[in-house]
Image 1 (tube, rainbow, N blue to C red):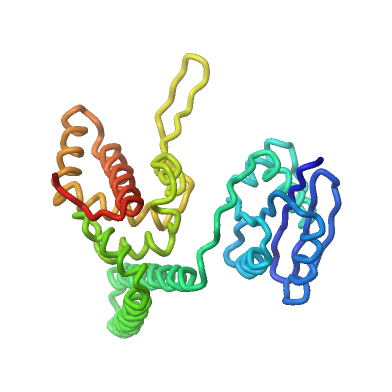
Image 2: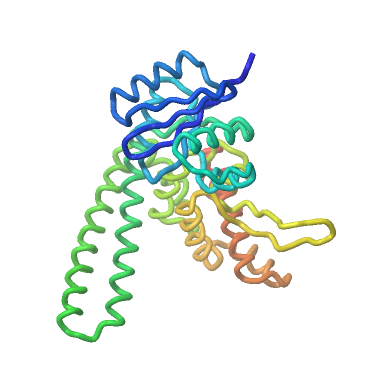
Length: 310
């Protein structure tokens, strides 16, 4: 029996669907009626995987609707899809073609289908993401403030910063309410924050953006965060190792934690100092600290045991 794989290209108004290995294609509108028709059709097909490309939020409703219908949904990385298309020599780009490439990618790579975060976790993720955006806007305004000399413009920038800071305070209160209203989140935050170097902002980012924490191996969780090293190698030539991909917000949070931990966490400070003493560049050592920090946090959530120094 053929293993059926479905690829869906998501745009603002419609969903283009491709089915492998039959080659069937069709499209539905990206609204409630269209999603109902799509779920019913896919139930008839009984696919092994239904893959959608991350498209800046347009895919969210479709993923939620198909997951609620009990279908095996997975969201795939658009960078990997583009690289896969180039490897296939696929230069043409239309929505139906994109759907076929996504289906082919899912068939070839067999990405793991994981349970989606519940509605409350998605809400927390949205709040944390909005907080990150506000911080970036404040940073941008402060940079403009340094370049501006006209008093009127400086006053305008100051007003904008004040408004953004007020909004940031409001978002922090919303995030705090969200975390404190859930015993499971509260316990998880307390476990994560027990590690020197991890504060509430980092803990809440991990809760919101890395719900798999504690459920995967250290290599798998490092790959999700974009902290798993990969090496360029060809024949006798061996290049440097790099990190990349994964969830950038999680990786940024872990780097923040690593910066603090290499100074105030006795275990990670000793680890960092040992790497530097061995001749490792400080940035390489910092990446290693971030990866080790993630490994520690993964074990803490898995074992439900707070940080212990000995």
